[in-house]
Image (cartoon, rainbow, N blue to C red; front, side, top):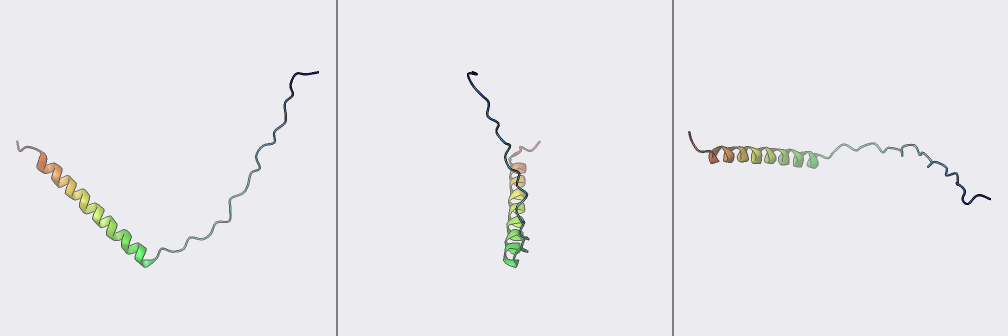
Length: 59
């Protein structure tokens, strides 16, 4: 009589991708907020670049 036995474990069941819901177009307000945020980020980045330029000593 063997001391132990191996159990056959079946592989996990593969499930197909869930039914994808079509994406709704973004609302006008969301688009406007995105534009404002992008412009604000660009301005902040330009301000940081200018500040770094001012910190360098003149040669």
